Length: 580
Image 1 (cartoon, rainbow, N blue to C red):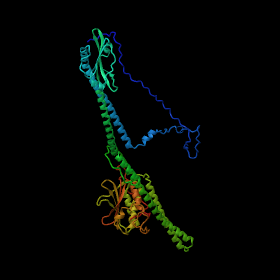
Image 2 (image 1 turned 60 degrees about the vertical axis):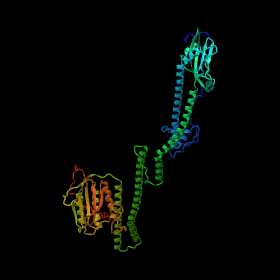
Image 3 (image 1 turned 180 degrees about the horizontal axis):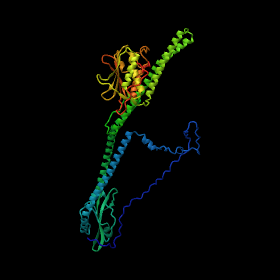
Image 4 (image 1 turned 135 degrees about the vertical axis):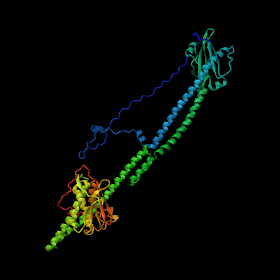
């Protein structure tokens, strides 16, 4: 069997070419931009005293025209609004489910396509390897009574010079797959196909056949021989494969949605805990905290940031509450302290107005009492003003001040004020040499500290009680000033509060037992403003020691004159006194 040029023969039908049906859909028209429709919207006026202009269809400008620098608000579509209203859990589960479904669909399409292509390739290999021999056998078995080939799944058709012989497939194959509808092919048409398999339809609608054609020349007559195999097994296998993929994919999507919902809810559990914590804090429980998580995770970093913020909020609220409480107490105590001298002044004024003071001695005594009340009230106002200025944290003048000079001046003043007392200036450590102890600060303020502490000793210890002022340097390099007395001392329950404003151990506030309770508060405020600390301790052998620590001056700062100022006593004011 050889290929030769085609000769006139029976009319043949050209091979059917597969063409994709032309489909046309409606073209998407571009949506025109939405135009602003004038309406009765009222624009907010830029100034409260200028009435807004009436909005009319011809004059009502858009918001963008009124504020060109302000970005226009984002317009959300109904779909976007509905999506924004979906809870985060449902969003994440929906996204996971859609992604899993799309992945399974893509995998199924690829798998079905590869399986179908592979099985069709196997049929093509079988046709290419057995088709030529079957065609030769068909020619050799031709008899006047037809072909003598045994029935099989193969379909063989021979067309030569107007002669056509068909070897149909077996009866079972015809019942299952039908018979292929093969176009008539000339030798030239068969040669043009180059022995490549092609697909033809069948007499059964749901079946296809795979065929291969060869040119044929017999005794000078040309024609073609076509060998075909059914694709029914391939189609049924692919259909079963698709069905299995659809069923398994649906199950995988369902399991993925359930597993995703569980995983998302478990992952978002810290956010629900944060939500419950925020609700508890909003209800007033500022001590609640977000449960900690590993800081390498997003939730852990969020929890750490929120806990830090909540701590600051709690501290701020506590500080504000304490400040408000101190302010209320401060106002109440100040009112109480000022009410007594004001009431005395008013009472003496009423006595004078009513004519009850008839004797010159009575008038003199009344004037003296009024002056004492005014002096006490003035001292209280001065103390309050000093505390207010210290609370403003105004910058201090930083100049070298020798605490030894201040202590020596205080000892001299105490000798002049109460000669019966033994007052000494001693080293901080017994037996250590005395010398200058220089700090940086405002000398008048530091003198007020020493004066208040010494005046406190005079006010609250029995006459003749010895007093010691010790100056030195602590092991950490800080300057130390101690005022030691050997009186009855202070109970521990009151020692922690003596630096509070208006605090006095004597609750009766008798004028014979102390002042308003601001002297030690002023001491604490001045020392704090200088970067130091002040505290109480028990004097060995009985009594109280007030210990003041201040940062020492740098070595390169020149030392002040050790002779110190001479003149007025720092003990002149009677309102620097002891609070406990």
